[in-house]
Each structure stands twice: as C-alpha cells, then as structure tokens.
Length: 171
Image (cartoon, rainbow, N blue to C red; front, side, top):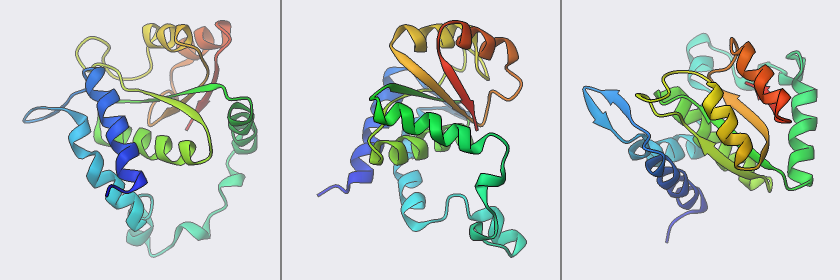
C-alpha cells in the first residue's frame, strides 16, 4: 500500500505533467519523475537540514518567527485554511522550485488547505512569476498565492495580483 505522502506526491506529479512541466537536465524530463525522491527526503527529514549539517548547526537553532512578516504570513495562511480558500503554490521548474512546491503541497494539505500547484512552462512562460500566470491563478479561484524560490523581485506581478484581489506571500 502507498503511504499518504507518496499518494499526495503522485497527485502533484499528475498536476505537473498536465501543465506540461519540464526541466532541462541534458534532455527534457518531466519534473514529476523526481517527486518520489522528494517525498523520501521529506520523510527522512533531510530537506531543509542539508545546509545546517554543513555548518554544524541545526534547524532548531533558528526561530523562523524572527523573519520579517512571518507572523503575517502564518496568519494569512491560517485564514485561507479556515475559510477553505484556494491557495495557489507557485514555484519555478528548477529542482528547488519543484521541491519547494511538493513540500508545501504535502504540508499544507495535511493542515487542511485546498492547494493547487503552479509551475510555469519553461518555454512559454520562462523563469519567475509572470503576469499571465497571476491572471490564470486568480481566474481559477485562488485568493492566496504563495511563491517559493521566486517572486522576490516581481514587484509588478505582485501589484497586479493585489489589484485582482489575490494576496501574495513570497517565501
């Protein structure tokens, strides 16, 4: 029998394949091919700890609530979960973007969130948050957009999202 994480990862994989997600590693490969390994790493606790191991510190040495805006992001995410809003999770097609979206999808769904992953098409949309994606995400009913591994310099795209009634959290 499949574990819940593997079942959830397969859902993400299918969503990614349906969106035509691909990454370039010598040849074109569907990003979904790596989700099982991502889930294994999440289960083993390896994701998020590799950098800490290199520096000889642990994740527990840091308080994420010290990051500016973190409590606001938590509060807004909790509101979306409580109100059963659709939360769009946006990450790029590179390995850290795909891994981030897979991890967020699994974690937020466990908390009861209604999530939808969005990974842009490498060839049609390019890298980073884009206006077309923002419009699509909003038109499909999302009221909260969480970006991972991108979006920090997407001032115009965030402005558009806000004008459409879409709140944005940039991780």
